[in-house]
Length: 114
Image (cartoon, rainbow, N blue to C red; front, side, top):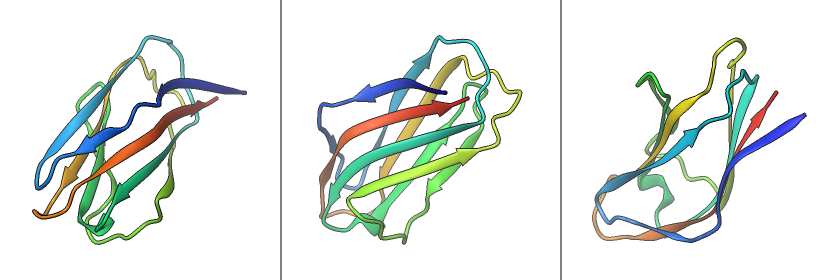
């Protein structure tokens, strides 16, 4: 069974040599086995991007390190949520680590799998 928690269908511009975080307030109490993050990211130098996921307790996990050059369409699977209540604010951080190039994120979807 899949539970789609959050979807964002409006393009969001990426800061040049900066960053921002998108907050996803999860109100559905419960536990899930994994989180899948799907998106389109258009950036002329995608290897400059650092993506970090922060959970409601403040723990941060790098989901895309600097130096990785993934495709425009990308999926990240974060496993091992068994027994963890996912209720609260999750933050997906986008950090453009070098000046000179910009881009945007499109069709962002967080899917929690029971």
